[in-house]
Image (cartoon, rainbow, N blue to C red):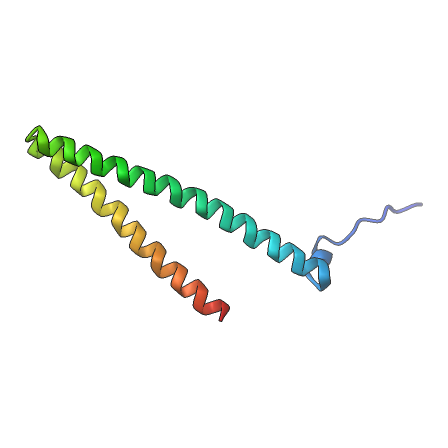
Length: 92
């Protein structure tokens, strides 16, 4: 009876390959985070433009709705900034 060799999937989690794996994970995480953050900034800018348009049209209801969305996005920015600070403290 012949058994096939199957490498242990945990074998990359230590040694020099483990360090490379960790760096790749960090890189991919940072790349995705940058994309998501950029899209959120674009969304925030669009909301600001929409708010100005609603203001010029004197549409109070639309202004209130957009303002609620702006508060949510700005809160997300604040939470993200706190997470970044915490992560940087973890690295130092």
